[in-house]
Image (cartoon, rainbow, N blue to C red; front, side):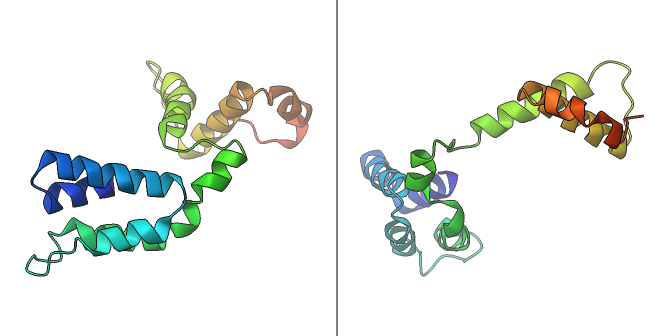
Length: 140
């Protein structure tokens, strides 16, 4: 959505028009209508603007290049999360709460092993992991 917000901010000076355009694009994105979103962004490309300062071509490129990641109707149908909140929360739970404790000093290898073990524990996969423990590397 931040690409769309940037395009709307530049394209529409009136708050109502900006919000209406964003609502329309958000709905199209939610419904998997990527061509509609790409066309709407392309229509907002400012011909007199420096391409490096115009968010519309950047949005067109982003949505075009990431089309395969934005099949939101299928993701919802399969029960997948949409948005970064779940991942951000997982990163906080797995990494921050365990790895950033006072006095902890990590090397990359042991940090990865502990993160994987913590992820297994938090996702109720600990028993399956523990059953394979003789085959796993140990964290330092």
